[in-house]
Amino acid sequence: MKSYKLIATILSLLLLLSVGVFAQEEKEMTEEEFQNEMNRLTQERVESTKEINELKSQIDGLKAKQAELESIEDSQRELNTLVGATDASVARYRKDVAQLDAKLQRREGSIEDAQLALENLQKDKISALTEFHDGVYGQMQRNLDAWGEEEANKEVSYTVVKGDYLWKIAKKDEFYGNGFAWPVIYNANRDQIKNPDLIYPKQEFKIPSLNDEEKSKYDKAKSNYKPAPPTQN
Image: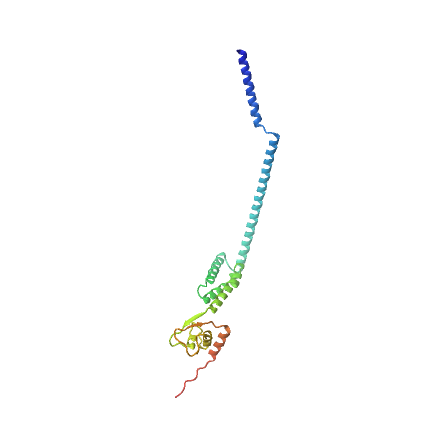
């Protein structure tokens, strides 16, 4: 009986020893596994180092950009001083330029008022600053000139009323302000006017704009006109 117990005890010990050895073998790595793990860690280190260097490069770039911007701001302040401007006055001028530019884009108000406002901007020394010069003397002036051409080429119509005649229509201030320019209306409406002395109510006439040559011609005729002296009975 004792021998059986001894054998059972020995078998138990052998079983425990085999389990311990098996667990130890599970925890230990093979040489190949160890090398693979080292390679993986080395690769991670290389990639991390690369990312760190890239971040450092970006930081250096941002620092350089910041220094450049600070240099530009310093230069801008020097230019402002040369034209007698402050940051506040430049900000106001920038606002005035933006407002006038928007009005020009929308064709808002009158051309005369827009031209006066632009001339006032051009007279200001701040207009010499690079930020404003091309816009105030170039783009905005061209936009204003284009607006003027659009208005000059815009076709206006007029409905004849009783008592009208071509001279009277041409003399209206909203048209030519000069009766001598009546032939322009006549020539523009030859399809309706057979005899310039005969026009009729409800006729719709085109009133074209005068070009520079026509305006000069009829202004000269108007200035040279001398009414006949009144007849004496």
